[in-house]
Image 1 (cartoon, rainbow, N blue to C red):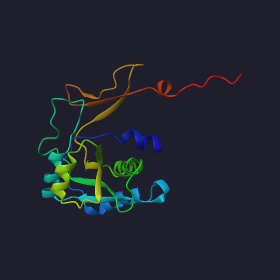
Image 2: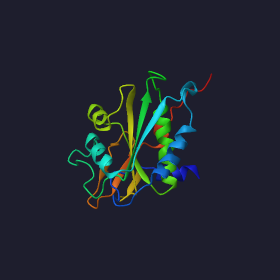
Image 3: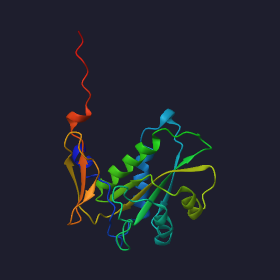
Length: 194
């Protein structure tokens, strides 16, 4: 059921780093993005795939991991992602990418979840530093980075009280809690036609 898949598709930030993800799996995940919708069907996205530990080591320090967890610098060695997919916009095709990369990233992460792989969509990226680390040509714009691995943490959803705090947090046991606004709070009621 799609709702179960969406519920299990959480932002995981700690992984079993020693468990490899092969390049063929990343290609299968990118194929899901390829088959997804694209504005005007322009298909301006390109993907850089990394399962190489040395390349992963260069990508890691360019990423911001959890804005609400101010005292947490990101996953420790041994808990870092085993793979990355860097989503790029190809300016030779288009200068604006709309929401294509969000659609692609969600397709990739749902496919990963179905395979027991966790991930985190990261928009907080030192793009200049990553561009240099990857030696990317200027016509590529770095849009998102998806970190992937086998989850080493538990992430739970909970309802936030109406108008309450929606900041995620970790409890004393390291469980990652994600408060979500209730369905009633996010649906806007229209006045009755009269």
